[in-house]
Length: 294
Image (cartoon, rainbow, N blue to C red; front, side, top):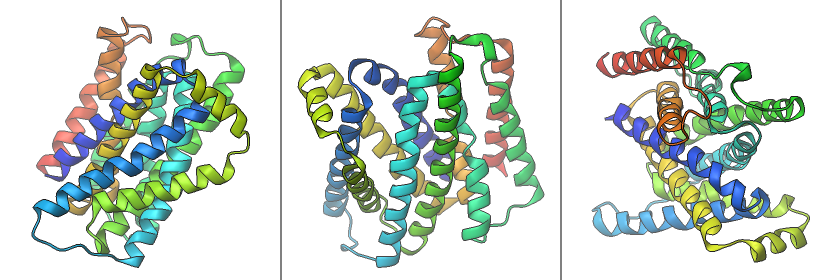
């Protein structure tokens, strides 16, 4: 069940990467990110309200769990997701998905240091197999027309992205150990991220101008980004209750399995899916299947 939930989270986050490609082309990120964060608050709140009405367990609150979710929101949602949008804008969805897929390395270190999580040699070997497959899926240097300046900025944004996602997910996993409220925890995390974004924004005139110039399609795309990332956050929180944090994060960040086929069949091979990337995808699938069967 943990693998299934982690794969659902991967599909959610992978869909967000694809949608982001079109969202940033129609509306600047400065205003669009506010839409995403607002939806990140409202959509999980609706999910929690529906869940609370259907379940037998009463409403609960845990300050430690809420604090860890808030910390995960600052590190993962604000830092990680914010820079993920920049990475997609600078490098394209395929290269962004490759950066996205390397954050389990940070999650492995964070789970070891903060959650005292120990993995056996079998799990470490299977993780290495998945990482090697993900490395093979990376597009060649000449596969995209990214300039030197954009590539350097994209590299920095990508590194901040993977660090934020890696440690942010560890904080969420720790929160779920004491407070099993994935939807409400997602609300807490998103409120913290939104508050920080409000605090650091300076040019409100530009943001207002971007909102006035935006059309319904642009707003709808960013709303879709908010919904998909909210679903991903809830799914991964539930997955980390049922399996090791580092392994759950590893499965979640296999987004190239979704991104590259879409690049071929929908984007008409614009970012060049090759035999190398197909071989990498096979290794990733083999590693995930082995983790599920272990």
